[in-house]
Length: 150
Image (cartoon, rainbow, N blue to C red; front, side, top):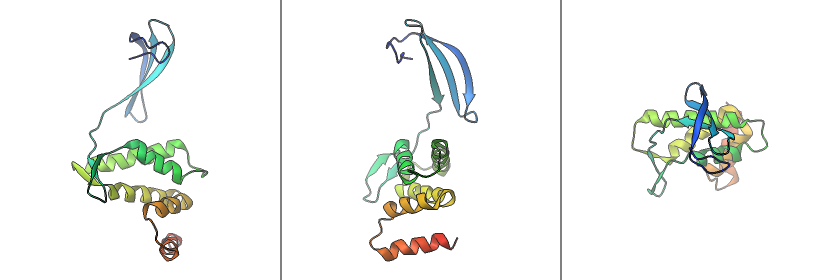
């Protein structure tokens, strides 16, 4: 592991422990050159399916895009970064369970909307307004009515 301080490639592991329900291993390391300590996290690399976009183009799944969309929807709302990570983890697990090599991007969009609908109404409406690309006020009001009737 390359030291983030001096860039050397020689370190030793001081402590290892599981974190996040056993999904991640946290390692404390010490650089043998500069003797500074740093933390690394290891997780199993999962092969995620390709996403099939509306125009039938394909692109690799990008966790950061899901997180960025959730963060934008939840901006200035009482929702923690931990909650956003948990939602993303749940969505990834559901995608993995499908067992497909390709998944329509709309599946992820719907999963995000479902999670936000139960979490925070304002965040849900924000995400839905961009994701659904409302063409007029009637479509938007229809979605609001559905939300209110739940």
